Image (cartoon, rainbow, N blue to C red; front, side, top):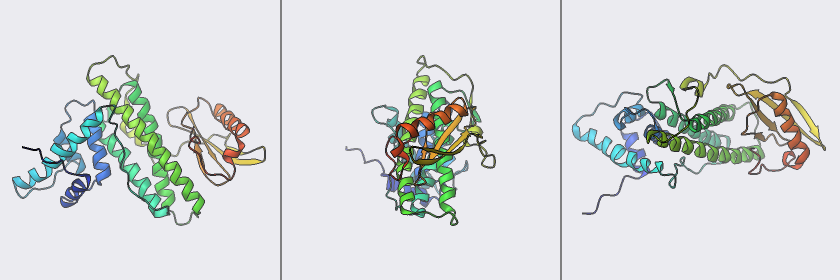
Length: 301
């Protein structure tokens, strides 16, 4: 007998809506993926599903209702997501069409923010800290930066007092696509590093545990800004250089160009002077990259 087809993403989304799930489908999918990758060995599929309802499952009118929920989520979606532990079948964030408008891009940024948060929630389960493989630890630090960037974008795009232009929205759209690819790459690095560790491979472990609260940070405590942040002109091109702490003892470099597009270096610098030197070098070597031109794929260093 031919096995029934697994439920589609659309069917799962409708199922979550039917049972009044407070977690959107994209985030729910990421929670389950984080749970599958988690080094917390006693984290069961049922416990992961409970997380989608903030730890309290809906009240079922019958055993059939419970089966109608768990069979598609665990027998379908969970098993389908588990295949992403194969490095040849990497996990991808949800792709949906979006309008190049403040509202459309805000929706995109919010979905990415929720997906990253969901993956981390699933990975940690009920744990406040995890001792992770070094590669997973480093990738989570990068994901923390991506989460902060998408969170900031949600707030900025929701602010009606901040003017936007078609060009700035296009620039943000490109930047969001770049950050999506970066986020996916590091989620998959976490998945693979944890998979190797669970299989007892010789995986170097991080020296310190990863703290879940530190990942999300405190929104009312902004990163300290370096006094070396400044407007900088080289070869007739003027940019705003922003250098600020990453919360881990290093410095983030951001250069805002003539079109108000943000160029953020993926490398974090040991000192703020090194960050400023990198900005000066980039501006001297490639001034046209920061002039009135679209952001290109290598603008995020």
